[in-house]
Image 1: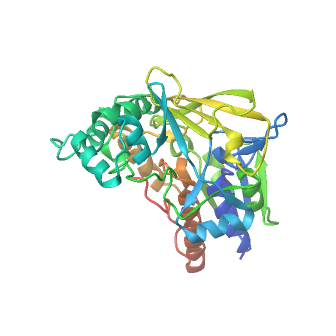
Image 2 (image 1 turned 90 degrees about the horizontal axis):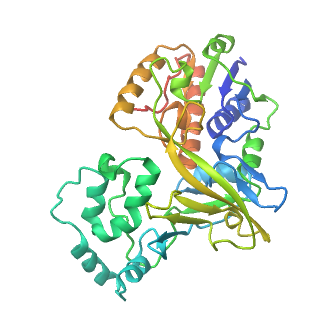
Length: 383
């Protein structure tokens, strides 16, 4: 028996779940407050330069999940792309993540891998047995010089607080490579959609059982008009922020153009704290198979998210987790509503994880329909 479902949000979560339900014979209404589909993955072709622009900041697809890789390639051709990040620190340019070239360049050495490991052990603060925060984690594994050059200033700007206030888990256990591999990611599958993410998501939504309405917001009162609602907006927003707002960091973008090649790479970080922006992204380099004379760039500034800003990074410190628990309790009392995606579960998610969770959620929901069982409020617990 066909049922009628509402997807609040036309990003990856809403599109993937909606497609699964539509393919199962149900009617799906997708609603989004923006003028485009794709959420923060939205890409568009710049009319002047022809550059494919990642409007809300760059999104690089990388995954080890073969099914997810097959899924995205079903709707868009993904071409090879390796994310090779550079950083400007103290008047010099280095490769990230910290690798053998970075170490040799920074310390003026010509170390081989085994020598570099011994050298870095000498730099590390081995008196820190159990790092209690981000700063101690960095000092324990890379030492003060590398920490202050590549991690401290960037982290201060990105999170708006001292690194001693951030959990050690934010920093990977050993953020160093003892070879010359400067590919930012380790994943087996890496690439960029040839025609952008918006084209891909539009194709996922292109099904006779799916209708899309843009520039429209909905309130929780509408839930009764549908058999089930999948909500991928901010969980606190569903309840009109009655308990307060969950904390996020947001981004401001200073867009500028350049006639030629401005920086020679897609991403240039700025580690010095006296440089107000965290990085500059040059978007034509995200499509290396294209050739453009003109260039579109963005300086990125991170700050606390206000009520009218786009939420990017959930803070998830002690106070936020306590408030989140209260909202989760409210959500569990809702009827026929499931909270999904980055904002619905107040978690930072890479695109491949978002798609994986959406595929799993859609399949599990269809199983609930078949068995006559109640659908979960959360397919993945946010706490």
